[in-house]
Length: 156
Image: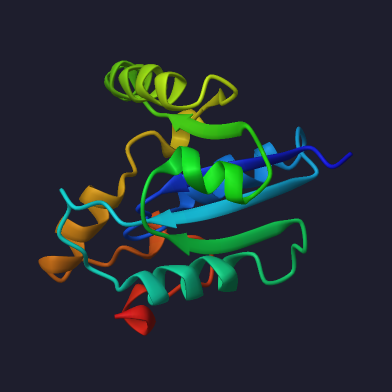
């Protein structure tokens, strides 16, 4: 049986830190489904279609990574994908506190969901989608925060 995990987020944009989590997760799982969710609290830089396209471009040579957009609850998306494993990356104790709350809610919605946490590589811990968006809005070069070979402007 295939060991599959869902790595869900808004990924606006998908950063080098996100990529690192997925690549490391492939050592633990046969397949990682990157679920591009719609977060009503966040103002989007990229359309959901362009987020999916960017992530597919990052993993174009990795058949064990699948990418799909979804609306609704992450627990429902996990069930649709046929897995009870949710993958999260942690950059800091603040991420842990936030994700622990989300995990508690997910457990109430679906007790079969297990969340696996991977600590972000320390060299990538300062990278967040919010930082990349802000820097980009001021015209800064964000290439060092993005997966190699990804030009954010191509996806706007």
